[in-house]
Structure formats: structure tokens, C-alpha cells
Length: 336
Ligand SMILES: [Zn+2]
Image (cartoon, rainbow, N blue to C red; front, side, top):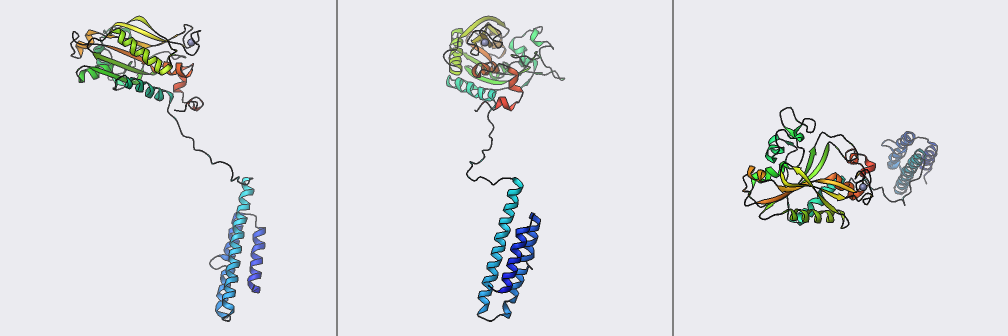
């Protein structure tokens, strides 16, 4: 190797070896192989050489340049290792990005809608902010009914309200179409309630409505039993209790057996072994008249269900508040 190239190379490698920072290394790189660097300058000697010396010298200079660039790379790598304190283990598997999942209530809505699709129901919906007419009047709710009370319902300043049930969707659908009707309507509902392990001011209901000729309460029981078995398994029991709702006659409340305690009694079922799911019944003739259907020709049943309660039974969740707290420790347990 030409003496001068050899000396310059040796000098550069020694300086790099002793450099202690990234900026030092890059500065040395500039001094030797930069645009006007010492090695680059050596190429300017080529025209002064003999014809047979020229290619050999050129090769030597290029080799020296390669060696310096290689050394710069390895010195930078060493600094990096010193800084992070570890050598990267290239045999480790890659990091997986965390993908979110559906909220358990959204997943529950999808499952329920799927079951009712299978029984011929169609999806329907309505607004969360309703008029008194759709939420109460058209559903045969008298003006002095306690559910209209300011202590039970959220009213807006302009006289609207946050719907207390998904039943207004029944009226909206029936006013728009002729019977028969077979719909399922999931959605959020709002009530002024005291928040505890099984009550919340915001909850999700699924409304069902079936209007046809010669429909009976037995059809309703059959559909709800099939539903319970599809969603919660064949072991779940269902019971009807007589009740009163302004918009159904006769009316029932229906309960599912508590799967959390296997009917032994727990806070979710309040020690009774049964969890109240919601109300149901045969659509009151006054409601059918209100939407322009002839009650002599058409009958039907309607039902609502509290979705959080069903999710609690299905997944063994003992507190309704967990659904709205956005605690990732809770939500990550569901992989829908
Ligand atoms: Zn229980």
C-alpha cells in the first residue's frame, strides 16, 4: 500500500477507536472521507503518478475509504449498545400491536340480533332524544303515570326527553308500515335511577314487536324461551310474573334463572335466584288504534330486555357499573 494512504488510514482508525461519542465519530468521518476529507484529497494525486501506478493507487485509496466507513458503522453500533445497555436479541419474536375489541355490550347486541334474525325479525331503530308523544302518549301512558315524573325521566329544556325505553320505536315503525310487523330494536335508554350493582341511569334495551293475525301469549313465551336457550344455554329457566304496563294487556315481567349463583342467591339476583330481564305482553288495543291498525284483525306481542342484565348472567359479571367505567382491565377480558 502506498505509504501516505497507509498512514492516513492508520491515523483515522486510531482516532475512531478512541472516539467516545456519536458526534466525535461523525466529525472524524468528515475529516477523512468527507467531500474534502484527507482520503478524498489523496485522489487528487492521481494525475501526478505514472500510468502503471494510477490504477493501483486508486484501488488503495478506495479500499482505505471502505475500511474507514466500516469502522465508523461499527463504532456507532457500539455506542448505541453502551447507551441502551443491551445487545438486541434478534431471535426474539416481534412485538404484536394491541388490537382493541368490541365492548361486551356491543358484542351482546350483535349476538341477540343474530338470534332474532334467525326467527325472522328485522332490525329497526329510533332516536335517543324523543318526544313525550312517542315515549308515553302513543304508548297509552296516562298523563299522571309515575314514570313521567321529573324524578324518573330526564327532560330537556325544550320539552323533549331522553327515552326511558326502546318502546317508542314500536310506534315509529307501526306508523310507517302496514302489518304484519316483526322487528327487533336495540338501543340506549335513560332513567333517573340510583346507581348500584344492578341499576344505572344509562342502560341498553332490546325491543321486540310482533304483529300478525292470531298471535297469542304462548307465541311470546316460545320466542323468549328459544332466545334464552340460544344466548345462555339450555340450562336457563324462564318465568313470567303478572304485571301492569300501560301499553300491553295482559302484561308480564319475565325473569331468567340466575346463572351466577345457580339460583342459590347472590347480590345480582338479590338472593332470589331469579334476575328480572324486563317486561312483555300483548300489545294493548289502544296502542294498535293509535297507529291506525284494526285491533279486531291484528294482534301482537311486544317485549323489552335489559341487555346489561343478560350480559352479566352470560359472563358472570356482578356489577352493572363495570360496563360504563372504561376500565381496560375489565374490557381486555373480552375478546370479541
Ligand atoms: Zn344469583
